[in-house]
Amino acid sequence: MGRWRRVPSWAIERWSRSSGVAGHTDNSIVIDAPPEFVFDVTNDFDRWTKMFDEYAKVEVLERAGGCVRFRLTTKPDEEGEVHVWTSRRCMDREGLVINAERLEPLVPWAEMKIRWDYLPEGGGATRMRWVQDFRIAESLPYTDQQGEDFINGNSRGEMESIKRYVEKAWSESRSATSR
Image (cartoon, rainbow, N blue to C red; front, side, top):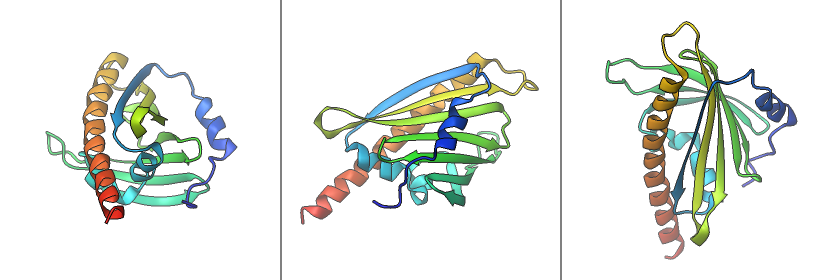
């Protein structure tokens, strides 16, 4: 899998220099597939519109080293609104870690960072963990607790969707290789 490279040191330094986040979430789910497989599937942008319930379109804008800058477009929400933003994702396949951040537009966030960890579990499974640190934009009437509640609810739903997708892909890949 030669397309993954080490995350450049500048990306790690930028991640660790957060300007003081106020909100924090930590969610995880166990997926019945090996960590390397889960990592590869969840970092295949061509699969995101099938894997994530909320995304209608993913556009890769730039690849540099182990980092990708991309634009996400959501499906219409309950009010019919579509949201679009740009993010950067720095992938370390050897360490099975992702560091990502929302770039623009930030609103409703003043800052949003997420770390994905792919941790080996017994029986060849993976604990996929998302740790998100953020600050709500000061111009909005929301509290950090409301931000945490929103992210926790959304993360749990998306993780369930990812789990179903990856486990199906793992089952299909094992069936194909046993023929």
